[in-house]
Length: 270
Image (cartoon, rainbow, N blue to C red; front, side, top):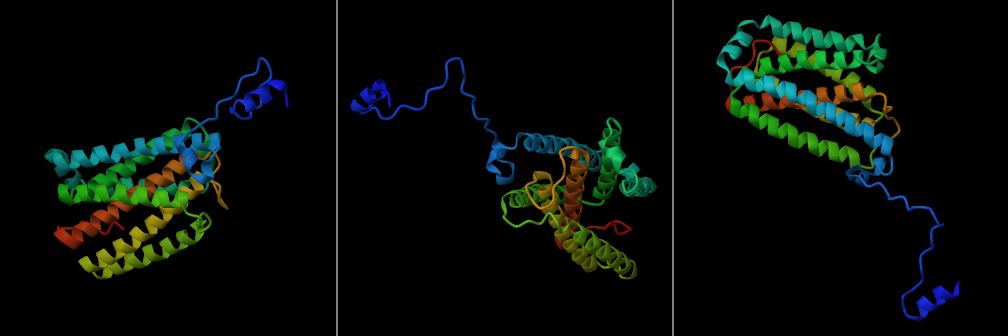
């Protein structure tokens, strides 16, 4: 201990901190709002990946929001969508086909600009499908569904970030369960056309969509048994977009069937 330090202690100032070498600068610690998430604390590259993914999802969700508003409040557009319902089947088929194509052409999601073109095309097709469904509901029901989707999405995302439970590895099991439930629901709804059947199916699919959102969020945040790489920002945005859209569609069906009993689409859309 130097004589200067002892002098300071004698005056009650306390022990001096270690002095930096001459010419060096103290590096400020990087602070980010994402540091509050345990799995992201101190991981700047992962935090940048998360920001990029959620920025893409936000921009993607603006497309169906705009189309839904137009279809609901612009009568000529609403009438066009209802009259030419075959476009809905085409866009729905295209979205399913694009997802299935990823089995063989997954590499396209990591190739710029092909990955952005794929993401934009899928967003447009899926947004039109969602907007065409909303033509059968009142604006109030759509608003309630949108608010509940935001609340449910935020709550489940926060749960996925802060829970100690690792659900990142149940994705394959969820996929098989969803496939089985979808086939059973389709057969059941073709045989029995009932509001109660649709209500039960919508609740089941809503629960599955919530589980998917938790799993996908943990894959994106990282720090679990399984995680996406920082190069998988397109597939990550695609997964979250599908989760939010699915939650919205089934919440809308539940609200309509439970409270308003409006005329439902002529074909099942679960």
